[in-house]
Image 1 (cartoon, rainbow over the protein chains, first blue to last red):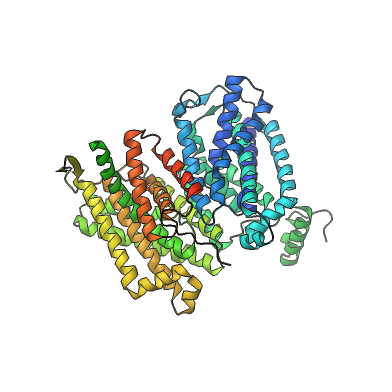
Image 2: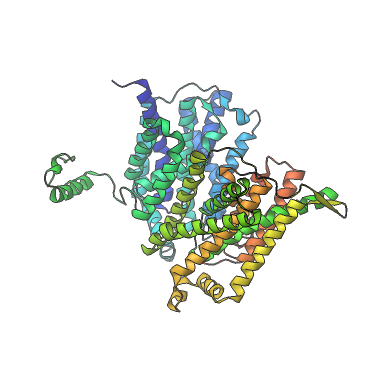
Length: 301
Length: 292
């Protein structure tokens, strides 16, 4: 039996998948680490909620508009990308906090620290699944396009990419804008899932959760990020009593992942049919009896 | 007018503490070229060690402060040894360093919350809450002590870097780590020393901030200000980190007094963006391009 509680966890997983897919493009494929993407979620969430409640716009219109708002605001980060060094990481940290402060001091428009309510529950699991599926298909196409390959070149070697005639700052900014759009849409979905918004929902911890999903899953693997988002969203639900220690384990796991296996769970592999085949073959040749337990694709060998 | 000068003095006092943090951060940045977000955990380590040693009255406060510095210095060395060195051995990209350092700062901050508690703790008063009157301005002894401690340690660091053989090795490594190692500098030992210094300075800054405000797990987030100060001054430059941090302290104090204390952090961030647009090299104009 599937309880409504499990369906709401499924919805939350789908929302996080949308946000993590966006961040995967930025961190996994472009090599920029952000500590402020909850700020973009916050902008998307508040834009969507305000447009819906105060201007009576329909649900399906405010989702992309929330993303668009986050995308536009990401423009202020552009100057940090023109510079070499860690300017972006620090600016992102400041950005996330600034957004939270603005929402806190937004007066009647955002409801301030008291919060903003009045949205009905419109993000249920079918809607969330649909949006997550569209987001993933689009992202897969972006990554496989010429633009996606450009980003990977930048991640691997900025100077070499530049010598090949790639405009590094412009492409990095495009990746940032797309990731901001994704996070904005995820935030808008979140607004109609929680039906109530508070600036403190989008704090540094939320940004960390998103970024750590990308790192765990594999820097440079979209499906890895998705798997990590599913696991990392459901684990806290299973271990509710350990709430306080959750972030402790997040931090520790982040350090251990990078120190032991910097490429993350999936490395740069994608969860595809071919990958499963190769993986199954490897398991069969290594394991003797356990191989039957692993998922063996139909066309194996 | 006198309130203006009053704010300048407040700003100089907090700015000099930011400078202590920013210098350690800049030192690490100049050698390994990554933002060490774990710097905040060195600060918390110092603040909490100092708090427990002083509030339990085990030893005289000055000794307690010294031990707090040692503990956070040792902690920084430990982090370098067990987190950054393995990454370096794998030919670490700066992205990996950044993620590891973020992981450490998240781990440590939340570990304090979960193990010790999120509540605010006040240091026992070490200094009288008196103010010296000077030319119509009130300068509190606490502010004076903050600035004094900061300036003392900054001069000590300057002496170490400019007058000792180890200091010369550090400056050489900041210029080019590979060449320095070819010239016979033991890079592992050198990095241990650099992190020890960064930890020392962050630890003393933690104690000072703990005395000035209170001790709480999110105290480490003040290092963000020091990072911004370092950028204002020019990322990777030590004098720049000091000047940038002091400017930031003054700007903060003036914003809080004349505009709004709630918008203080927002304005700091706006200044960061404006500086990055118009003068990305910072005040000291250090801008190192990536080396091929």
